[in-house]
Length: 374
Ligand SMILES: Cc1ncc(COP(=O)(O)O)c(C=O)c1O
Image 1 (tube, rainbow, N blue to C red):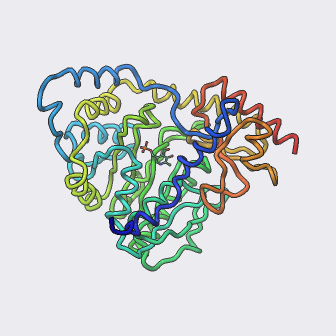
Image 2: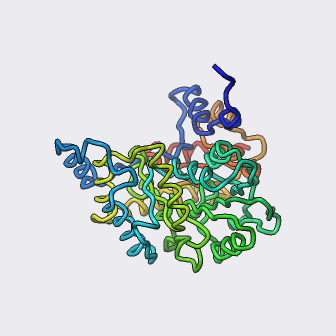
Image 3: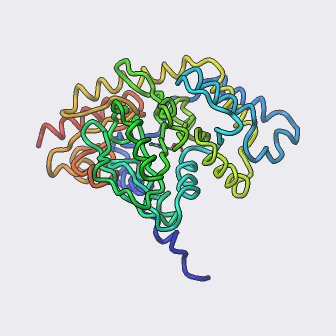
């Protein structure tokens, strides 16, 4: 075999795979409140739509699906964007249907960056963006976020920037979009020629009466960028691998081309289930949001300096010297250590509210004791 290609050699450690291995090695008595895996199942009518469709013994269901996705699925996401976020989309030109936004965020780097181009990533930010940059052969540049989650645009490079990834509500910093941030991103994109990629994976999970804010609702957004929407968090469907990229028609066309060449589409019953989720009763979206908000309130009351305006994560400072290893060994509780999310994450940790109530409450109690003992 020839040597491993450098695009594979460049891949960073997969943060969550490594973290899970560390938590598993710590043994069964450790409560893991670090992992963001939705614990509430999808609505029953969505499961029903999958099963019903899978029962049809036809080639239209079990044969190759249309490579670029069912028109009805694209119309379904356009319907949701119009009704929930007040954004009109052209389902044929402005919607790409992908197997989850993890796939989307990797393929977006591939269709936007030439080898050696820069991609700006929020710091702290979601670690999988680093993988996308590595696979695209691009250069990762940290875009530090201030306390309110606003990027440091002034310190950002302006040459050779292919894309800027943003994520509000933000994982792990748990901030909602600060006022004006999308307009600032559009201005930066116009000035530099960069594309904006807004990760809206937690779009519906905002608290304290905030309304979900889509990047595409901002004037001029679709001229410079796209937004990723995931069914994982809003509908508890992380294992189903369903997501969309919406917005700029040229970027959508490039992604669709890659889909046709590299993936051959998504299993039709999954697409039917996505349509059921997006167009059926939406009460569970609010129930899920309210459940996470109640859990969030318990975490904020117990952990000093903790913050959460949205997502299902709480971001909090750790006392000096209270490391992941010590939390696990001395207090039997595991969190996601902040340094894995970028240099700015050092000294912080992420707690996941996607944890069953009993385990969450016990995990919070152990954390509170650990912090109080320092
Ligand atoms: C910020 C962020 N973006 C994207 C994803 C990926 O979501 P999906 O399940 O759609 O691949 C996650 C998953 O945890 C996430 O936290």
